[in-house]
Length: 142
Length: 141
Image (cartoon, rainbow over all chains, first blue to last red):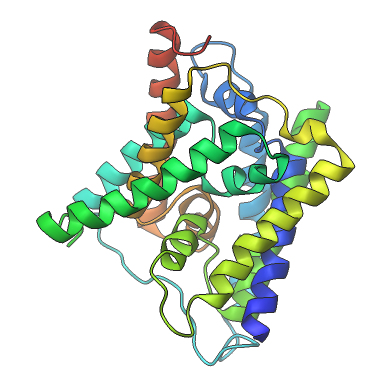
């Protein structure tokens, strides 16, 4: 229950950050990726801001024995660069450029009740299910 | 510095604070693709927080829309099929690649994960090439 409430607050604050940053405007995202055209570099500062803050807080928080509301840490520990990581990131990047949405801003933009974010999120969920089907048959993510 | 850069930086700092709260409270990475994917296959005790996180994003969206609807302007002028293909690629790709902009780009790089650094370089590069190609092909109307 407490973890759920915490996640709700985190989601809310995250969305506010996305909205202020410009990440919920697909044209702006495409402008950021349009390096060889009419490049709009502003969105690089979203990552810069997020990383500066979390680089510091990560070190401080991980000094604790455990999180405040959980007994264990659930932070990924994998180190190996796999084909799945490379191909998956490649496909994601192409989709990001084509639609101007990554998952967080897309879900946040559902609140505008416009068609595009809705179509995007539904297709994204189908893509996630499709991955399961393919992975079950071919075990592509071993 | 122009206003867009300042807004992006402020938004980024707020995102940094939110992912820090997730780590401090729940001990988790705020990887949005992973959170959504986990919610699609309910496991007892590991689904509620995911759904509530997504609800939080949506409530944040409603709040933004009430304060300034322009925050959701700037939809791309493209045919509908492109949105469908984009969604499919993002859904499939983020799960195959174990993360998206939030999980790899912000959380992973902050803890200096080599996997996340590589993933981020690849998806940004792929996005740059994709936009150049799709522009040439006249996909953006």
